[in-house]
Length: 55
Image 1: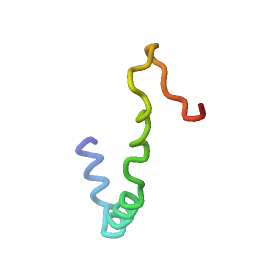
Image 2 (image 1 turned 180 degrees about the vertical axis):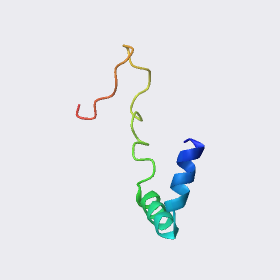
Image 3 (image 1 turned 135 degrees about the horizontal axis):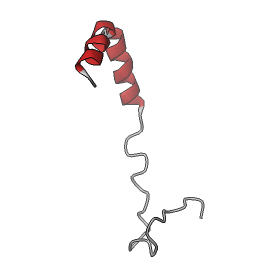
């Protein structure tokens, strides 16, 4: 963020905005994908492939 943009954001940032941002952060589910890949015991045999949760 440039200094100019930071100054502009600072002019409109208030307690209400801070409260809204904190509420949003606190409502997020932590580590949503923490269990992805737990069943894999080795790297993918082909580079660029990814796990398919529907299989």
